Image 1: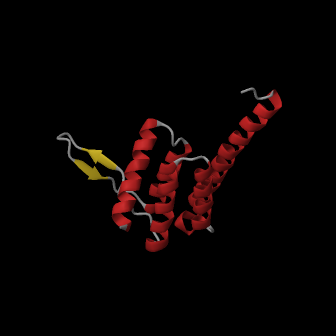
Image 2: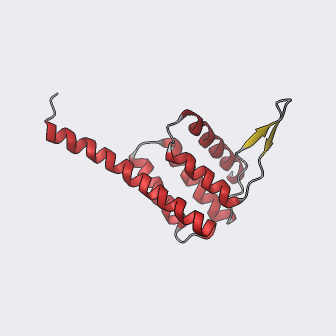
Image 3: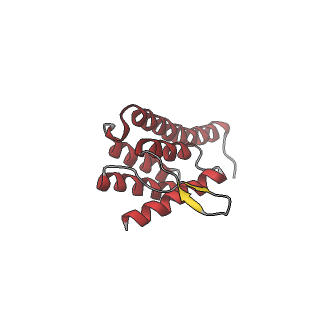
Amino acid sequence: MFISGNALNLWLNSNIMKTLRANQKLEQIIANVEKKGLEAPRLIEDLKELREMALLEQDPLVVKVLRLTYEFIQENECFDVEAQYEEDEEGNEYPIEIDDNENLLYFLNLLKNADHKINREEIKDYRAALKLELY
């Protein structure tokens, strides 16, 4: 199958634009949370819009965790999800005490590079913790 140069460039640019749009939306959400915390105007709507973009990018993990995130925030009016742990010398894990805004910001920053192996594992931890809290 042969794709002309212009058609190929259009196809590549359309894929870049989706990712660029999603990244810009994510940066906007992060900036709003940094300023206003969980009280950021339109936080839930913005997370829903970002989820729609993740659907277009066909990343089921991000789609699911974003839905769970805005559902959790709607139900609890906080983001006190215990998804980050530290380990002691004996290998025991303990949840890290972190304030809601910092926790949400940490999670959102993981999404900036959701394909990175370590970030992906931490996103899975958030997904599991959110599922436990919600269901």
